[in-house]
Image (cartoon, rainbow, N blue to C red; front, side):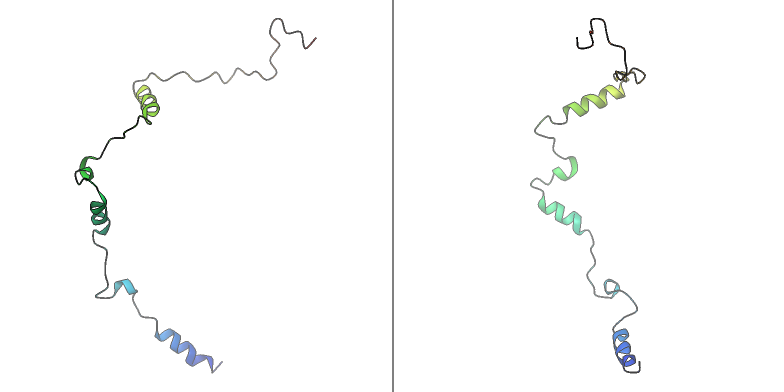
Length: 96
């Protein structure tokens, strides 16, 4: 055990009190994501107002949300009606 004590002291001596990113002079991200986004935009005005889709893929979703907002949603199916175990309809010969 006595031979491990100096090794343990050497390992613990490398541990500083703070974290590496807290040291003075260490680079800190300040607005980097916004700067990268601004560089990647083909048209800078798109950062403020965006661009509409060139296709109408969202049309079914828009229609459904509009109907829901206007209170014109379709009625839910009757959950009490079940085809399982139902009596055969007229003309059902039972496979004869």
